[in-house]
Image (cartoon, rainbow, N blue to C red; front, top):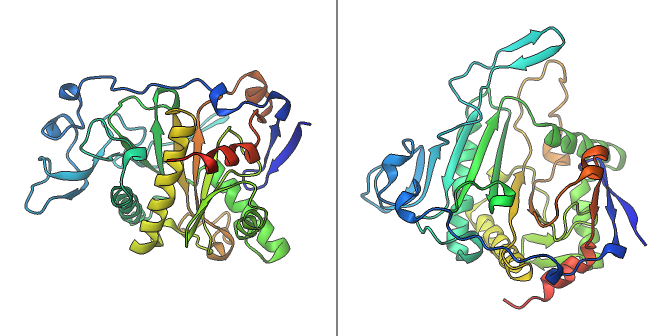
Length: 344
């Protein structure tokens, strides 16, 4: 029978509909070849002049900025949603509120190889990418006006990728985004009621049941959440409590790279190269909030960071947009079983 499942952290409901059960072969395979040849790609080594000046890079010793020799390169988005130069000034227009488009929008070119994507990465290559995420997050939070930094990746046109050369994005905003604010509020509520972290309890429950677990190593758990919004959705969560992704050690980055690489490889093989998004939800850093003076109090105790992987194999339609609820036609238990048993 179908059932509603409550997504506590996001404060929404999901309908799990096993009567409409779809197995991996029921989802069409995707082909994601290059949308343009390498010679026209602005992310190719030797084409650095086609992109803005680099902000940060991991390079071979002795190579200069904006030249070949890089392993991962970070540049401002050529068409940014937000700019650091814009003043974050609020303005009222009758009943509408606006704030200047202050923030940052960066592109992380994941690899110099035009045809390589994260499911092909080695653990060391994935660790290097996570290292760049960590360092850029630390740097952006050095600006006190920045209240949140979101790291995310779009893979495939259906997931929003406009260029096929593997890249990620980082957007820094002067407000805590609504979804993050909900996760903060729900995490605080659970901790206040039970004196425990919600995700710590979820990790313990999943490890006890083992129905939705896909993979685990010493530090991280990969599982399909009980309340998955999308088919084959996966979450990677530290098994030990931690609120801040930017505080991960190099060894923890290596183990996270191992978990993320395996999850993406299993997803790639199970669903035959599906489009997906992944993003990191970490605790916002303490800032002055005159209207909410206790907003950050205890956040290191009640917030638990995680990385979410959302395959884009189903399309939200009228019911989803009209209700805010999602219908998932593949149970998380079935999805985890397929992912766990696929042979790499």
